[in-house]
Image (tube, rainbow, N blue to C red):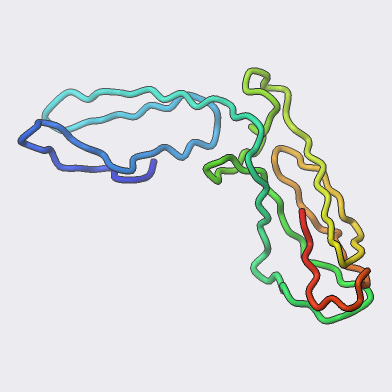
Length: 155
């Protein structure tokens, strides 16, 4: 749970108002929110988290020591990185990245391809498992366009 978890009673209206209260659920199951106070009976609210559908975006998680700038060489190996599938809220989809929420077994295996208009790449494909892929064999090979000073790589 995150957000405002404890609030004072509004004595004028007899209500408690929780701003920015949300559950950061990591598994598809039921969760119980219990609202309680020491002088009245508590009340429970059941929240059911269901399996998500196809992911919204891919996010690259670079290691802390990722260089970003490299010395010119015929072949430059990049550090390992992680690519994750996330939903529209930026939450990791993990194994909930699937074709349909009604088919729990229909997970998505995404083939990722890294490309560049100015560079030759090796190890430029990878497949996600449970919404995550560890990319560890991506190398930049001599430029296709020798006059380019920067070489964008796309996913």
